Length: 567
Image 1 (cartoon, rainbow, N blue to C red):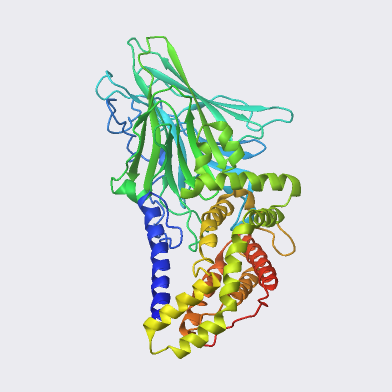
Image 2 (cartoon, one colour):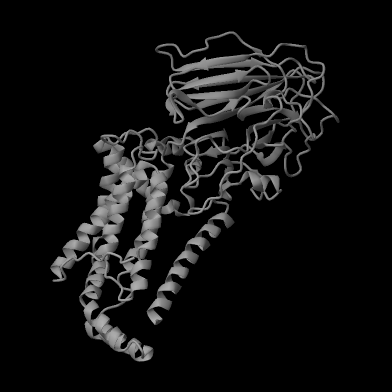
């Protein structure tokens, strides 16, 4: 009876630890790891596109900077018809709107749409189904006249004639937008796209065409709806939403719900860092150079629209003078080696959660293996093999302890039967047997528990790495980021999990023996909906564990024996 109570308590304790870990993740601003909350279905925005929606308020700067409550209306600007312009490089097809010179669509030419593999993946978009755009403009700064109006993302600009596609042999493609004179100020935006790059240089030149000094502020923002990306799985959790990075507070991400509830607690002012919109595998980010003062903000701008951005003051600009602010914009896949070269901390948009310190070296090792093997699937197998070799002696101690427990099982069973009406004597007799045989009942658990953080970190690496997306392994597995279409790998994973469970010592109590099978079976069912790369990693781990356990049992004179449940 005592063993039954202990088993039940261990199960409750284990499940409680899982729940506590999930709540700790949520408390620290992360998504739940094991029990993600299903995404609420939010209807698409029914208003006009963001780039032209007059209801979108301006970003409000924190701190002493005086900012108008709403973006200025471009009264007095000459009427002009807005248009959308498409430009193409070798990796990007971008659509700009002459209203504000905003980026309203980005098609990634090297990434397929997983819901329709005949199409390229679209990240930024401004349509009836989705809103996700990048905008910049000017707002009045401290000391400006009340109600001052300056060129913003609502101002219709003129596109300077030029190439619209990257020519053979050319390294750069330049796109230039010029605003009309608004409030005595002219804004010129110049986008420079580079071959093979997901980063564009964005130069903002502000010209004072008036007769008095002006003190504008430049804002750069990313605006998107709060809907989850199409096709996202509900069986594992990934983050979608805004993030900021500063040297002071490092990487901070915020749920859309927290923005709506005014629970945003981020660094408000900085002279370094970036702002970003993050989702599974992809991100967009505005980057300013270090040393440029900026105010950071996150806010809700409409019924289902959210903005993250930064505002930088340009100080006084004398009549006839001009000032320039250089920025960069990233829009593309979360390729870790690319991101870490662009800006300090930008690789953090590829979110490994709380185990980043373990996940990053694991990704580095996986990438090194791939550089030799040239196949991500076999690289995963090789990485798990290396980890099993690294943890060989820990596993050996665990399996040796299990083998000893298995060897004394007949004595334990006989003793329990003999003393079943004397629980205290049974407990004393059991501890005596453990002492005589020099067995630690928990000796099989602690070595395995030490390894759990490493394998959770590897799980995060495989789940977060865009390299797995549409990457083939062998035979019928053509995409490591999607579930096995024929469920062969999940079935193999379930069989290896049950085989591994059956090799463990069977508890003398029948109820305990049945409960040992509950968690592995439930875990196996979940993996039917997991990406093939994750399932393959777990199968490899199971197979190597079974082989090691089999060898150790044989060496210790405890022949492997399968213990199947009797339901």
